[in-house]
Length: 280
Image: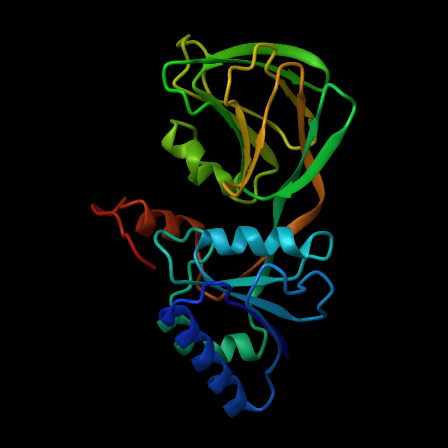
């Protein structure tokens, strides 16, 4: 079995776990760590591997997905962050279930990714691959945005709000959830559009088919209006720019170990049993 370890965080907890994983793999003799990805400049897209082991939190998985681009490989996240909806395997889980990993006794689940295209009014454009969400917002709390939404070219509504989120099912438990959006099952082929503090109470979250194309425009963009992709890429938005979001041609591939349950994860991470678990 070929394994790639992604450990960009240089903090001692992350690097200590990386060293331990190397030792465990060396003892088995049939698991080869073919590469350590320690910076954003390290190549990941063209590595031929059976599993990409990402050490950190959900943000580390988001970066790894983008870095793999059109060459997605199965990812297993070892949570060293906070909530960890994607990276939901603890270091202790990894140790106790390593035999499953070594024998490739896991399920690979496909998850919706998106492409976001920012088309500028001068005719230029930029394309980005994402997994969680697209956000339009303004840092000025006293100014609201008017965001026009069209789906497959048909006008839908104008949101007057502090911001607007278009998220995948995986992203539905991130910023969208905190803004009052619904939780979508991660395998559901859909997008959810969630306004942040809408001025009109009839503007509620909207769920639509993943095969649709969503167009956003901000005809009177206030100073500082910003497009944010997966919380990590930020771009200025100006009047008459068009933002298009549609299903990507590739999927995020998450490895799930035996006994994994999405609703068990929600129960544990969201405190549905009476308390919120703050760490892995």
